Length: 216
Ligand code: DC
Image (cartoon, rainbow, N blue to C red; front, side, top):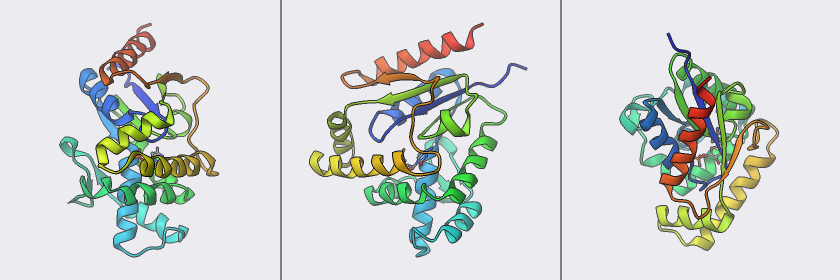
């Protein structure tokens, strides 16, 4: 049997990871895993259960009990469909806080490795190429200039670009400076600046890299 392939796509908020990771996975016939959705689901659950976002012990307990699945593009948390609820801006903010908890990260990391253990996958996040799959065959660090990233998120959410710019700059700062598995480019990751590129161009660049790295 052919060895399974991991394509790790990391980068800050609004760099275009989800759109291209999903289409690259479709084109390759690989599983698509949005690791950010997993942190968002834990954050949503913590809020629903009134668990303070700095209660590390209870957050880890919640994360260990969270059963997260991705059937046909949806996100299920212990069987409940949370696809739309986790996309709220305040859940993104809460996810970034919850993701600073080492216990939550350990639980999510184990789950991410389990999901991709037996099949090829495109996984996007902040620490996929650095920590979750340091041996991934293909690693990409997607970036774009901050104004462009804010514009993209504003178009998705309907909020003002200025407001979104402040939100994502705070979130990126937290994600980059946390002690455990901070957002960083793996030394062997390909840096790709998506400012001014269409999703199709980014997709082609990634597919080219996958072909290069997976052909002997
Ligand atoms: O990709 P996203 O915006 O849905 O991620 C939400 C938050 O989850 C992000 O601010 C940081 C956290 N996250 C993380 O710490 N590690 C990952 N691999 C993915 C997301």
